[in-house]
View 1 (cartoon, each protein chain N blue to C red):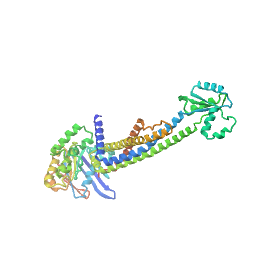
View 2 (spheres, each protein chain N blue to C red; view 1 turned 180 degrees about the vertical axis):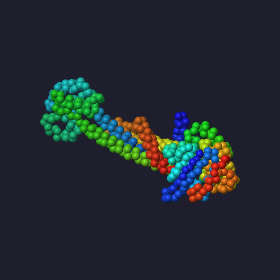
View 3 (cartoon, one colour; view 1 turned 45 degrees about the vertical axis):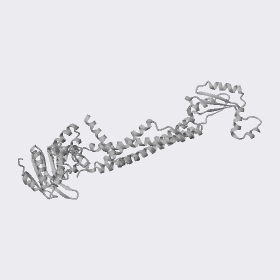
Length: 224
Length: 304
């Protein structure tokens, strides 16, 4: 699903965010990316979603070489992956339903199909009853679940999450990570950037550790 | 295809809703566009009216045939009959030297002085009115030349130079209105562009999110293009209303003034065709201004 080969990212000004990162993630794996703030977790996710381009090295996601993807194809590439953000990036002037439906609307799906899939995604995260509410009226954990529903509504093969439990208490964080685990068991490749060691120990999944932009630890592929 | 149309309709109504959600901002923009477009449209309407005034005088054009001195009245009347039968002539009126002198005395104020003359120095005159189809300045000019060559005619005078000059001035003014319209059209582009730029900036985070979840540039552009289109369209409508209203306010006094000159001239309003052009032009300018702004600013907004 993901293959990085000697990937480096140098920002203008000479700061090396990533240095010679090489690893592969299989189609049905669940992986935690960990490291201190500034270790390069966010940069790695930005490169995987083409918010940033790698300065050197090869990045292949879902069988696409990202360096060769023309700018106009980027939207279509992004529809193949689901992304969950720490600040969930919900639109606060739209209802929960409209937020979750947005990727389908953007992709031009018919209203009937959009409604069906949106309700299915909301059902999966346990928020079917709150589809008409506005995100601001929901708790932090519920907002994050809306973000997850939006990320999976397209049925992507790859789910990326950047500190999805960063702003949540332990109980809510457990729920969120369990939700990711559930998607993984249904065949979705899941990559979670986090420094929540509790979740990492609880899940016992592969861990890739970054330190100052370099690959420090890779516990290696293991069956899910 | 049906889906595509449906999505366009959705965005269309969404854009209309956006305008309604911020009525004051929308109204300000529309008012600026309306007033900007109203100026050249009003000038255009006034020019059209001036041309009709000129055209009216043109139609009343007469050719004066001064006959040779001492032409007997019978010869003059025979000539009048001959001319009356010519194509392109509507009517001929004979004015004898005596009645010409009488009229001259009355109008010139030289009455007493003229009494000192022992003979009448004025020639007989035939007033020829061209038929409608020959009433244009050039056709009447040709008729005057033909009549001038008739035996017994000393001079054929067709004095419509001033009509031609008015025509030339109006043409000049028309060019001026065109230039003004072009400049103000560019102003509308800039106004819409700036409004759309602000709209884009105020929805920056929304655009970022849509880009992140795979929205194409075309998808993001669409509501802004519709917004520009509607602002331009409503601006054009406002301009039409402004011009029609102003002309309606002027109609009474103009009728009054024309009455004082013995004319039944009526101020014509902006026609349906000109109004439609105003609406379409406004919509096009709005769309174009939005297109320019969106093209410049959307690319700059990238999630990061």
